[in-house]
Image (spheres, rainbow, N blue to C red):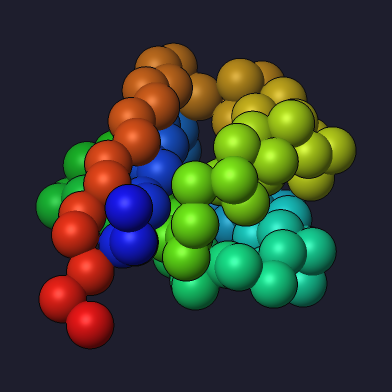
Amino acid sequence: MSGIITSIMEFEAKMDGALNSEIIVLLDLLECQYQSFAKCELKGVGDSNCWLIECCWLDEESMRDHFQSKHLQDLIRLLASRSSKIRFESLASANAK
């Protein structure tokens, strides 16, 4: 099946400059590590302390490898140390082209 695979981490945390910088560095490392990586973005959700990290992959195998990567484990440890809640979700969408 061809299509974009999306993984989402939703978390609640008080975002400060240090946390934002650490997340961005780890996301940049993830982007450099995978050739089948389409993008990864940190997004605020409304005016609350709720945040999303959305990563898009060109194939499922690369996404599965990402779940076991050192950089993702570092990101999860960082979020677990600073967040009151973390939720994970994966979605597959059919690619029109």
